[in-house]
Image (tube, rainbow, N blue to C red; front, top):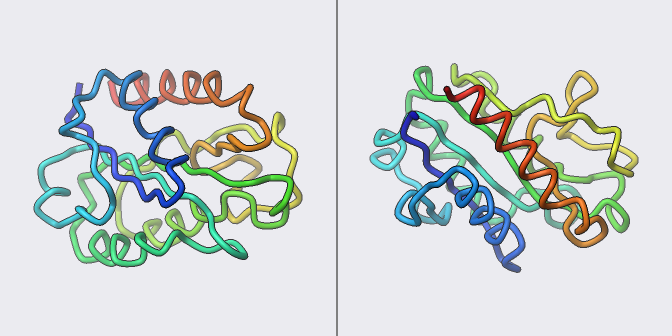
Length: 169
């Protein structure tokens, strides 16, 4: 399998918990899991596949620690990188901005030349009004609502990780 790194931003711990569940299913070492505050051009260069996780904050904003992280990613050549996105949101309280953080990462990296995988997640089992994370009728990454749909979290992660494994090879 290609060399995979997970970068996450987490203030409340939810996205971090999701990150470690994904890492476990991919059989990744904890040494390949990083807080986004540790994201650097050198770290990006070490890996072929980057899994990027964020929560959505406020009125559909990226988590604060991702603003520096996205600038690091914009400053490196991602043409030979494979990227998958995942994130957390609250589909009941923030139904009109559900998991927008994933959509913002996607928008910022879309022109980078990277290849996105895990980016055709069906929306049919989710309840929300709108999301920047939806493109052509599917989420551009794994969307998790662990607050309101925690009973679906593990199955969603498992399905998404299985898809990643097929796409990574």
